[in-house]
Amino acid sequence: MSARIVLLVTSPRLPAGLLTAGAWDVVRAAPVLTGTESELTTAIRAAGAEVRVLDGPAVPALLDAVAEHGTVVWLAGPAGDETLARELGLRLAREPGLAELELMYGSWDPPGARLLDAVAVLDRLLSPGGDPWKRAQTHRSLAVFLLEECYEAYDAISAGDTDALREELGDVLLQVVLHARLAEELPEGERWNVDDVAGGLVDKMIRRNPHVFAGAEAGTLDEITASWERIKQAEKARDSVLDGIAMSQPALALAAKILERAARAHLTVPLPPPQAQPDPEATLGASLLATVAQARQAGLDPETALRRATLAHAAAIRAAEPPSTTPA
Image: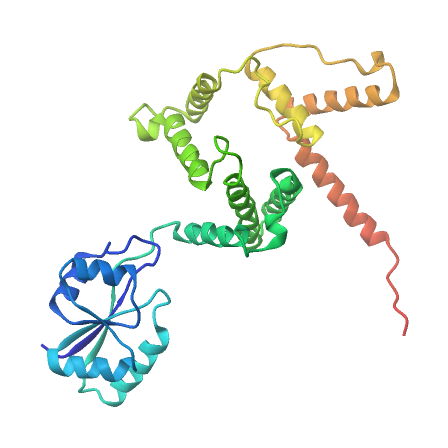
């Protein structure tokens, strides 16, 4: 068997020692060298393998070890030790008879691994010595930013710009993780963290999708939606069909949502007649509510319709503006 140097790369986001069977085979069968002590070196030693931490240059030590043992493992650091890999690769390219260089992944980042990085970064920013601005915020002071980021994500969706959407969703995620980190500072008995947020989401999705997780009949999309609503109603034990509606959302969207909930509950409540209202503002409000009801009957979203018309009018205003002039 030819001499080989195995660059063993592992995920820093997984528990130390959680390696593939192939990785465990190679670290048990060959000398392991690395540049620094870590939880992984401790785990490998605990499994009966030897790990030597180098004080000096790594490349000469690796070449000496491979000449003596035939195979040697370099345990890469969290960043992958790219400089060492490049230097070693160039050396072996100049002297091809020394050894073969093999890259082995002992573990991979699981899906969602960078979410752990996001949590770690926000923890650093909100801990003592972190960012003073973020440490000074509260749930209330950040509320407007949460709305703004959601609107910007909505704009990206409306524009069909998926690259912008990826960035804007990152800003929405920032708000989620930031609020969760702030909640860790609440008084004892009130505090919660990002795992509580994620855990609540997971539990809710499993409960409300029995056709996926509990072997229930899937049925039609309407039946799945009706099942979701039944489960949700049983969970919430609400007194009104309107409970749970976000009353701070834009007025047109709010009106459409309230009318939708009433229709779903088969409640028929007459709309306020505009001509019977006591003042111009109430008359206008009743007229707008009637327009929203007409839009729903036509299968249209009044919020989207008004936004589209407004943006078209904004474009017309821009086109009508005189060209700007700048002094020479």
